[in-house]
Picture 1 (tube, rainbow, N blue to C red):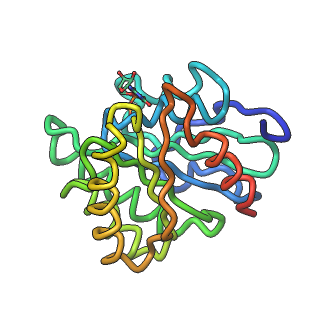
Picture 2 (cartoon, rainbow, N blue to C red; picture 1 turned 90 degrees about the horizontal axis):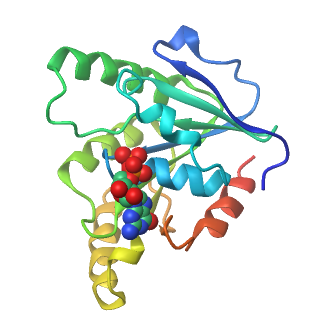
Length: 195
Ligand code: GDP
């Protein structure tokens, strides 16, 4: 799939823990339960790769994976946990801001949006952060198999409307289903084209 090994590299809790900025990287962000782990696993063809990042205690780490020899794949913790303590959220937000603004080799963020729900207020927060950091982001719709064709267009219109308000948005939206495999090859090709 990708030239070279796909493996978990490390979990990072502070900027000085980032691996050397020696290759292009892409990051994945999304509300918890959006289907991020499933998508990363489908993308890499590794069934349980992203599961480690979902275990408690790992949830505030920036998880690095090697994606072959040319890219790092960065799994950002799922946001929108109602029960997270304020101090934890604030610490995480500081790290996230520092990462997004300071990581020279970060080429694109993929923001995952559930096809059933569209862009929610909690998603808008990360989109604003990405605008502020001038990180180009691309929306990936997840769980497309859960929505009927005729209902999808309505959601896509809502998403397009939301993206129009964000200068850092990449216009093309990728529709995926990790369950059915839809859109996975497209997403791989997009990533392969990011240098
Ligand atoms: P995360 O919290 O964002 O990492 O979400 P997960 O990948 O753990 O997925 C959350 C739930 O959604 C799980 O029950 C998955 O089985 C389910 N799920 C994820 N992707 C899909 C999909 O493409 N289609 C369907 N039908 N369910 C999915």
